[in-house]
Length: 92
Image (tube, rainbow, N blue to C red; front, side, top):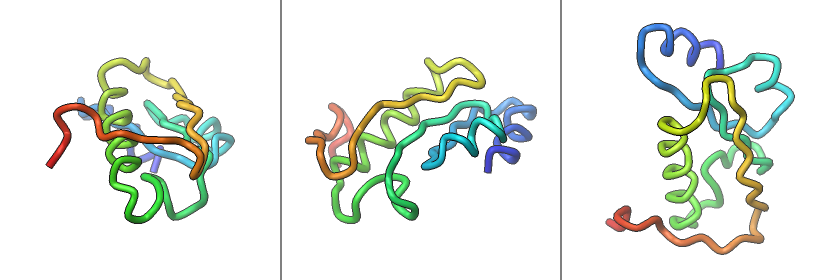
């Protein structure tokens, strides 16, 4: 995914990858990375945990503007041990 993201960035479109394995991201070097040390198959969070999923999406999209190219962001969220609230304005 990181290699594809670099090609898309070269075309002028900003990208961010959400990854579970930081060593892979360090090797592939996507343009921007959000590292979450969560189980495979759950890049956005637990099934049915809408607040958690919206928080991850918000962080990823927000990072498109504020992360430096090549940066690996680590919010430090722990699997099933955090309290999430849906970001303001993201309620549906």
